[in-house]
Image (cartoon, rainbow, N blue to C red; front, side):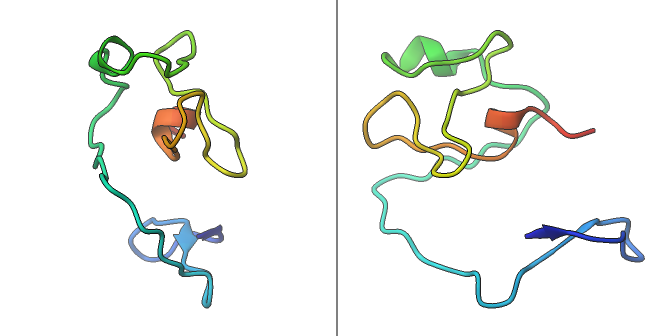
Length: 81
């Protein structure tokens, strides 16, 4: 995705053509909500979280403090608006 001018629906992002890729994984967790789930640090030993419960991850790779666990989006950066 890249930022741009909002479209008619108010969305300010659009897909970058040719940027799609696939990653083989064992598990995918779909996260929908307004804030980080407090169960994440309680149930995932070794996963570093920040002050407000966001997961600490490398900005480029999404790698977390727990081997084989990657995170991205609002759970890392916090909500934008």
